[in-house]
Every structure is written in C-alpha cells, then in structure tokens.
Length: 103
Image (cartoon, rainbow, N blue to C red; front, side, top):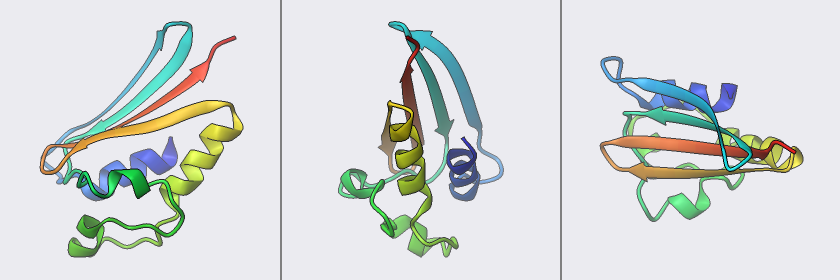
C-alpha cells in the first residue's frame, strides 16, 4: 500500500484526488488505489512492474526514483498469492487493483 500511495502522490497534482477503496468481490479481498494523476501510456503498461523500468512521464516530470517500487509491490502481492494490475489513461490517472483470495 505504501508504494502505491507514494506513487499516487508523486504523480498527482496537488489539486487532484487520490482514493483508496477496500471491498470484497467474488470472495476476494480487493484494494483499489485510484489517482487523478498524469496516467501511464499504453505502450508502458506491460512493463511497469519490471525492475528499473520508468515510463517516459516519470522522466519528463523529473520525479526521483529508480524504477523499483512497482516491481517490489508486485513481488509482495505475488508472495501472498494475490494479483495486481493497473488501468490507466494519460492525463486522467491510474487505478492499481490488488486482489487476494479470502479463503
């Protein structure tokens, strides 16, 4: 959660919103972290969970980082038998969705 929230804060302008939603769906515990930030280009989406990968937007905004956060988040979720995915639109923001089996 910390990694996803830190990224949302980094890439979302101060006047925009960040929301966290926790719920149960189809017997799975779900967590969504949604921001109204810069968004991620479609060409970058397949790579954002790779170590050291940084999308163009992160370089253009001069946001510090090494491209490790999302790969670490992916490994943590995977270790607990969960799944993480992202939906994003450039200029509209991103939603990171995590699901864990509740059984």
